Image (cartoon, rainbow, N blue to C red; front, top):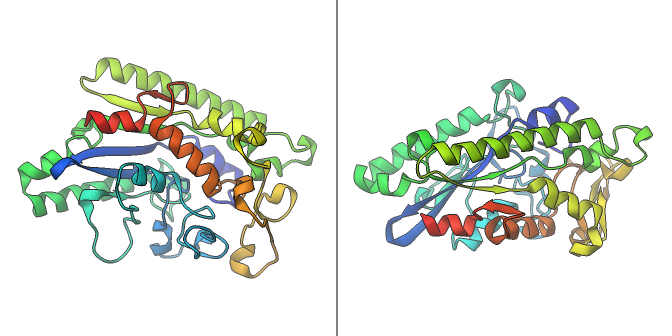
Length: 319
């Protein structure tokens, strides 16, 4: 996803699988492997040819990092907080040049990605992300040897190749993003209900599928974060969660500041709020660091009505 999504891309986002996969590494060390789209992309798209990444420009990254990193937020994303909770360093983009410590994990997420290559051929679709993960597996086997690599990767791979503890996030209320609210003046600031209905159908199917997998796949444990309702609560009742605005974005132009955060790499005028912490949304479709922090806490140690049947902290303990 990106802040300038066409509607068709919003529909394809419904098909995306957002996962965090965990593993046990030598010396009780845990690792975090991340797959997904712009909600989790730490900057992979900066390194893609023929891709203009708005998050690589100001004001993205303005708070925590003090410079753009390719993250679609003013600061950290959910995986950054999860890494911190697990006593891991920030997991860098998989495509970032230089040395990587793969025993800490890897982040393959790519803004605009979908399950299908056709969703956005210019970025890293889910199949390619999985191919990148296989490359990491190969490297670890070469560096650690077969036996040690197997121990590191046993719970990191998808079920068919050994994965047993997997975290999922359902699809959020994408019909109620600032971008979506701004699409039709007749909505008068309301949500795109047809899109919301599709999201609800998808999320119900995802929940049912995971329940079936848990019953039919020996040793399979999962965490499913209810991103849809937890984020909806914050957009509908922002003051309850310490926000002043749950409908408009901190950065952008037009109604609800729903698009063009950064003004096309600074070439156009745009509006920017003074304090992103007062907003749920940083741009037309992505959360502020403050919102990401709250969501990450729920993913990590939230109650069953937010993250279940296990939260990620419990999954890490089962590894």
